[in-house]
Length: 545
Ligand code: ME8
Image (cartoon, rainbow, N blue to C red):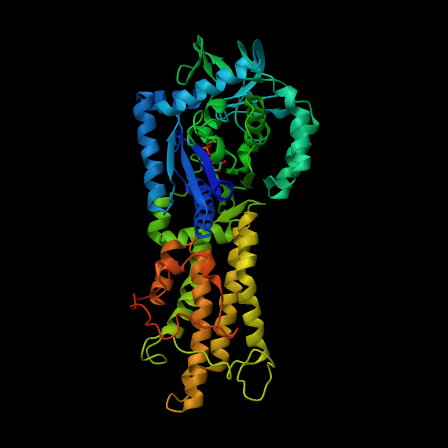
């Protein structure tokens, strides 16, 4: 049993589970890296965090894809699911659970969930007649459909939102009383305006909920869909793939046995394409089942490539394995999180990755590390002493002090940085956190540049004191940047912290107290040997021809 204080430290973060009809691309990796960043951040803050990702393997779309590939569905799913796992592992995605919807534990959870909804009277037998998009596995109302032509010039109907072809279907199946939850959902979102981040998507959901919310078909006839979980008690019907898929979030936390506490800490990361399923269907299912609603739904926009939507037919799908080879794991992670603005679509192209990594990781951060650990300035390779006379707390322009007002401004920025990073992480504005860190790195480089420690005479005691103080302050800044960067670029951050001689147990959020010597307190690092020189922090990337 967890006590209250323990349960308040529980955290649970998920990515969407990905369809196995396509191989992993940078869009999938972006969702996974975003969730990974939040998971690592919570661990540093002392949370007991779980992080789930995995694959969505049932449904008509997968059934058809396996058929086209000429494979039996399960082997087909296993192959693609393994490739997602492989890419995620290479990319440092530190998930604690990898869920496949074809697993037994998931089938049991879905069957139980269905039985609960049914026994509470929220599922009834009816006839669904309307549009269905197999690529989106989604039912659409007439207003969500528009005319178009296919590649042969034939007239077709497509989904206005996704552009995918839709088909008319009429079937007897099971319906979920979605309409019964409209006002409750509206009320929940109005009372909890921060549940969906960024705000733009909160407004969009409110707008959707202003319209009618028809009941939702939650099963398909077996004759059409075999690849899925059968409706308990009715082998002629297969459960709708989205109901099946959404329950994965519960399966991971051992629903229906031991899910209660962990479930109250649920946070979902999703792309904007699946907002309706997560912000309307999922909360409605949970309300019907009598379960708590998620804490947060973090929504991000999409990556385009050189201005175009990524698609197999355009042949512009970015393979994350190739990208990691070109830019390294940390390079790719840094770029995605630094450049990915959840509110709007972002464009990916090689030159942009190269420029950003070179200027911010290789030059700014790598340069800073080189400067403040240089053998020529720090021959003993220790964390040098800070001198309060050179850098007095009061009177920036004091007689004895060497520090100038820009230096004090830098200190202020670094003191404020952890709070700022935390605030941005909590709102999924990782790019803003990285912007703030980069601005501070720039200030610290400016600090070193301004005082040119290489010009000081190491045999002259006052100069030596000031030199040591400059190094101490710079190393302190770098220690803070290293700790804060761990969730984003874990290997690179480890290189920084190891070079600085910072022990593993000194790398959590509580260790972010900056420059305690300045406050007149003891610094446990002072006099400690730096770690070994592990070489270049981040090698400059070259443009491939
Ligand atoms: O929708 N940019 O799976 P899916 C950024 N199985 N992110 C992208 C992206 C892009 N261009 N393309 C895809 C499904 N994504 C369901 C989910 S959850 C219970 C079931 C990411 O394979 C983004 O997170 O189509 C998007 O929501 C997800 O992949 C869709 O993956």
